[in-house]
Image (cartoon, rainbow, N blue to C red; front, side):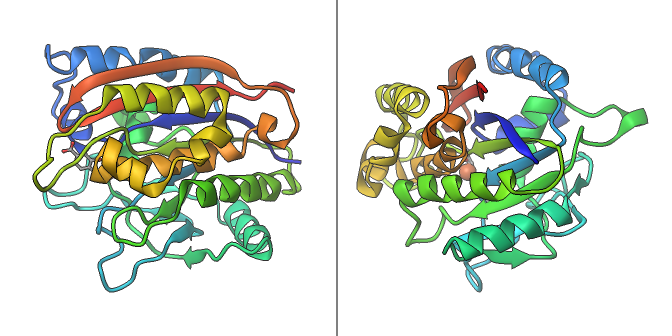
Length: 289
Ligand code: DHB
Ligand code: FE
């Protein structure tokens, strides 16, 4: 059977993608940030998954205000990097895993979560920046991501957005789905977006280091406490875009300890300000069996 071996958490700041694509990672502004991902890049090489289930949010790129799915699973063979106004990022096409994605859709919908099934979708910085941070820039002679990726898009852009508790419960359902897939594969589940930031209005530029620190403590050690954080507390404390953090709870809800197993091993924890307008957080948890 398939098993979830690890969860990865990371912010997705679009300027990080631009810094990578324009060769600026060694500039003094960016160097400390990319330093914080050196461990994760090596860890990815040492712990290569067969599939990444990547929870992220679309930023009005694939979904306009015309159609706003709360939870959307990508079931396609492949997903093109999106043009967000400056041309697509020069990164590989994202290869999907239609068979596992269809199995997850079947199982999770039968567990009473309404997923939108997406057979065609471009993926924006919300998905490609986490891949770049954890996998590095693929070389020209081997221009592909290390494994298939199932994109799972959550609406955290247009209200109403799902609660942290609902995301945590959804993670539990996704775990059941993956663990009933009849193939011996090793799956990572990633929760992306966050941390505190606000891009608009009178509080634009807001960063709350204390909220971010406590959130990461709870996420790692007491995920139910993180799931208890109310929507209004995210907005008040972490800024209007801090609500992206609910996506981390989907990944965390899929880990062994939430299902009566052992506590995960914390392999990496990193926090850095500033990166564009956003506080950057990153953690890696390995399941213990
Ligand atoms: C920024 C951060 C985001 O998460 C995003 O989606 C867009 C912009 C920023 O820091 O500028
Ligand atoms: Fe964002």
